[in-house]
Image 1 (cartoon, rainbow, N blue to C red):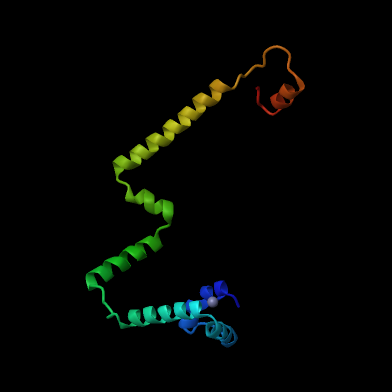
Image 2 (cartoon, protein in one colour):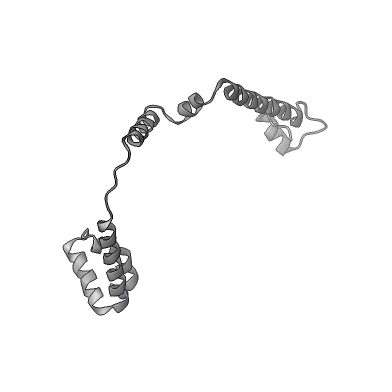
Length: 135
Ligand SMILES: [Zn+2]
């Protein structure tokens, strides 16, 4: 085992989450590697410090609001939730923007396409003309 592999698995080793064989490989590496041993020591100290922190309980009102928001988010899928969060003015604005985009697309689409080819058409133009495009 090299230091990179050891470092990647060290936190799991400290937390006792590795298989016996993998934990033994880490332990063997730590016996031979002072740098990784130091890293393991720091991880154990940090884990112990976190364990000493007092457990906190969220205020009941916050818990209720959080659970209510979570349930509401789970009940409504994304777009419907977004749409329902808009008031009438915003819904009208969204519809206006969508219609404006459609109109712009229609105007640009018809102004960029020449409906009747001019002059003699080459093979490329004939091919595209058969598909409805006139470059
Ligand atoms: Zn190492």
